[in-house]
Image (cartoon, rainbow, N blue to C red; front, side, top):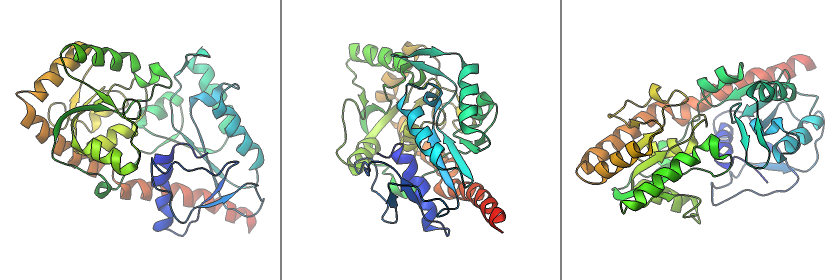
Length: 320
């Protein structure tokens, strides 16, 4: 099964602009169509053939540091097979390891173990702050096609898109506190993917596009994709300031940067749904403008292609 489908969907757009083709080495051919439509040009193989490819792209996050996690096992399955070509590892996380069933792991241990796994591969991370935390890595912010998102007329909806996996990492305690307090005030929060599971990507985009307010309570997730989707959808963004969010969110202008006090979040939500509704709509429009500049597919693909082309060139140099 393909993980990080939304990320892969954008990455695979490389093949629409540059001379590159993608083949997935995977034990089970499964693409979650409800998350994103599968690109028509994607190929699949069940067994790796040495010499047939120029470059490998692998994926992991901090969970790969623990040998009992599926992430660790999946990474090793591919890494152990693919030894004859240059590789890029996309690291989607940070060194914060806090799993309910496995406990916490010191960050220095996580960093050391991930470094052992990645070795000399180029490692892409999702934010500048993530690169600083890991101590190495090429920061590359994701990008999306603005025309694929729907800035619809806004309704008094408050939404989030926060996974309950790795609760501390994703800021679930803060989200739960906000949701509980807003519930006392008669205001509901829809956590898309949990409270409502869209049947299709179109359903998700319509729900997000109609929402006035988007809550991003993530504690240590670098450049949460759901937050960028909300900005492209014209939502009024309320977010934690971590991972350089203040470099693209101007507080009170293109969104709101908030701390860890749930009362502050709830008071602001109540105001924005009430007397400041029109202001929230204007802020959402500015957020979309910011996302179009800071998280555009063109910039993302151009930067990714530079990395891919440079690594693939190493393969050609070795063969000459």
